[in-house]
Length: 498
Image (cartoon, rainbow, N blue to C red; front, side, top):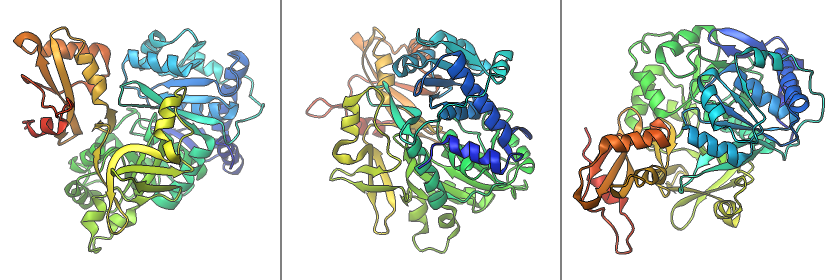
């Protein structure tokens, strides 16, 4: 199986003048230009900074054209990109930079100050996109040395664990190539004239889907806002063809509920692939009425990127199927690249060519996650008689809000640092727009009043803003089992939210 840089070399020879990267309505790089800029940035990393094969390069960046160029440069030089969620706190960036041993950082102007403050002593340079320094790096001598091998790392994907400490899933070129092949088999087709609109973070699912679009020699398009705005998305559609987009369910419903969507010409919009959480069947029905049969779904994790189960558009279009509501309410059936089963407890297990090599510098967590030759996802599910997987719960109590993962224990640790907090437990509660929101139950010491403003300020200081509790509830005691385990099920039952 070839390495990812092969995809860019191939496109530069076969379709040199075809758009490779768009920014807003404009093409900012053809495939020939992408190959040249990637080779020159690779030369800068190797010859100027002295980086060696498999050294790590962190991306602390908002969505931008330079994100694609940096990935391509790393793949060309055999370096390992470490994309990070742009919404994280400085302390979280600092931990991942130190843990990964990143030797360089590529950032964007909005995050440059934070990136420099978070940089560990091992970081040789913080290279800021859209500056003369970045432009100068792209004038470096082209790198002509050996590229990566298929078994080399191609992406270090940091994903939080139940301890609150992020773990780096080691994804190889072979893993990501297999993911790309599975996209064509199980999710959707891509024509060379098509494009993907990166409105969701490129550090996660949207960025991973760069790979199948490179395979098809299709364009990567970054909105001017670098994020998701329904008006902007609709305005961009006439400028690109065969547009696909990866989105969290909340983004899909926001687009469907946006007043202008129903009246817009959606003919350039080909597919919206959603993931991160299932959509309610009612939301699916309403969305299909507005945008037509353009939905597809995937269920995956950073440890097996974008590839556990899925549903292509045809399943959403076939409203005559007698089990249609059950099917679209599931997370689909196993993708071609993997085997999926549940164990005796209902935990979803996966093995196949997309499953990570293991966790970076964490042999204990690797052994636990990959025991018995299967990836233990931590999700609880069941297969119905037709072979479709239905997720029932998350054994790790993961909260997904707006497509972002939030682990309760990480938030609880911050709350427990307040001197008047005796106990704290965090759960997810339904939210009409974001899927879930964070609710904190707090037991105070000596009957003191709940210092909500102080707790909120503490969270702002320690963790990313999107992880902060949206509601605090004071209790005299937390419900517990006979063994002293906090019963989060009981907490969810007493939540009173509008």
